[in-house]
Length: 164
Image 1 (tube, rainbow, N blue to C red):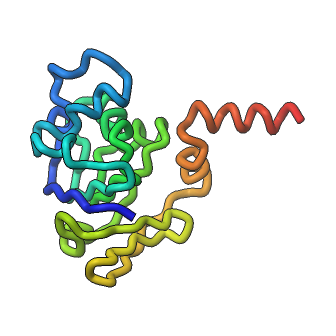
Image 2 (image 1 turned 135 degrees about the horizontal axis):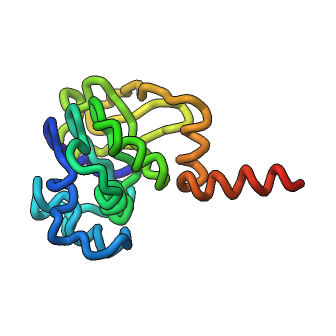
């Protein structure tokens, strides 16, 4: 369970991690400037287990992988948005960052709400309002990639299971 940090529509990759801070691909280093373009206080306030909530088209802009890496480095449990930019979504899945689509997320969560994500049940629970939201589920292999910690770890798992 964590605290919700809420953002609006069209949060682009420059807002997630401003270009001047892309001097490393280390998630921990990038996390120090995460969301700085949208909320300069975010990196100082977010703690592992918190949840990032946004409107539509989250992650639009550049195809660079640094944006989801910066979010991953903060330790957030998941990014919940009404929709994601296609390349951001793929980059996030590939590094094992849970990106969950909830159609009316910004109407049902506000900043500071206590939120718990139950990926296995496709449910987001807002404990502040006693509201449960359905996550638009993905194919099983996408969930397996996230659970493995990303595409590389998922590939290692497949490789090991094929050699037995």
